Length: 184
Length: 184
DNA sequence: CCTCATAAATAATACATGTTATATAATACA
DNA sequence: TGTATTATATAACATGTATTATTTATGAGG
Image (cartoon, rainbow over all chains, first blue to last red):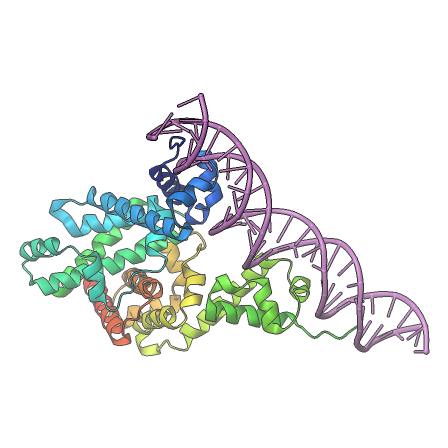
């Protein structure tokens, strides 16, 4: 048999980069094939259909997101830095942000679910000590900051135009302080 | 000449209801024609193309949104009721919310622009008196609440599942209080 | 009553996309 | 060396959408 020229990884890489750089609408079988310089066959031999490829791309995007956030979180200011990182993700990785957070989500039933899904338990414990507040109050600060951050992030991602990093940083700080003050 | 059976208004109504009930993806020429029980010709005789129909539908959606919010705003609690109304819009008019706020926006360049676009000057003046705060501080409260509200609204609109009205009302209240407290 | 302007229907065209059927050719292995 | 396997290409098919060309027939005005 002829040796394999196209790998599953190549297809995934090209699809992911298309999603990242041009938006998921551009992740169509023809574009992937053209980019690689092959026919559509290899794509269908490695993926059942385009839907299953999409799931895989979303998985890769989620990994990318996690590492994007992770590398920007600072141990001394977990919540603020995480908030800023999320806004940066919306601004500089707009297409991936839309793919991950502006389509169907997992199906949240309460804000507590949001915390369970996005929140970092360790951070909560740490913050609880630092702010001298019980964990449930820190959790509430956490949830409210996630919501506020999501508001800023979606506005940036859908607004087209740019809002200066300093301006968004400033308003995130203010919100964070407001939520802490509320719990004191 | 034969008398006009299909009017521009009929087409707009059908398109708007499709957008509202099934999402804008369903606003395609064939669906409109089927719904009315006519061919595609009338649509093209009243609208240059589907893109111009879309702009008209968005205009109608914006009017609908304004009246939706307007009928729910209470004079004694303008900001809170406006926030709740926006969340209700995201929850009960999800398709229109997505059409208006989760696609391309007008192109905001600062949070001040957000205020200019969404804010209500009269409300600011009124609140300034009520809270005994200078207008620029009220404006900041306004902006932050819009952002927070938008965070809640998008999570509800994209989350698929439901969050109880009381729960979202409660968290909006808290955020509002937090932002006021911050400015005092 | 005729005729013509035109609203609407019918039907064709163009194009994008997903998917599948068939052909080709490279190579592992007998 | 020959053959069977299979990676990939070529090309077809199905479907959905926008758009346009052509036809039909209605009713206002002469």
